Length: 165
Image (cartoon, rainbow, N blue to C red):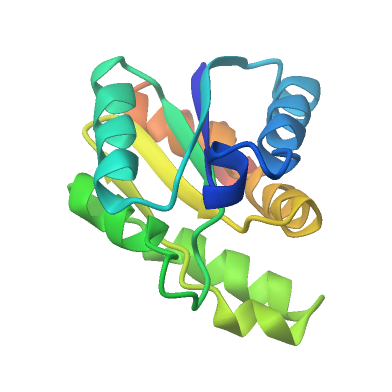
């Protein structure tokens, strides 16, 4: 499974802030799934830059793209808008589950504008920018990712496997 991790942050992109969320996501994905993180980069909170990376990575055949950052109320937070420009189909249940479960941890979760969707056979999920919140989001998402990506790849779904999910 080939994965991309995109950090969206003006400060990390210009070098005034160390990206901690992106590397943490890479570590968690590798430790819990063994999947290869084939692409990882940092971009500024610029709609066109985010869209370009998401499009390039889907064309490169990544199965999963996880973004971190740019999902809040700040005027520069445009990751959800960029994601919606790229996806063919929305996956609202993922974003709803992330917000719902995160609300059990912090009331600030209701301020998330994160989205999730599918472009061809690539799943794109927006995660929060803070390392703590990104980890919490992955904890919620990881149990369903293998099944979701199997469905997207057109792989076989056995009745037993479907019931186990």
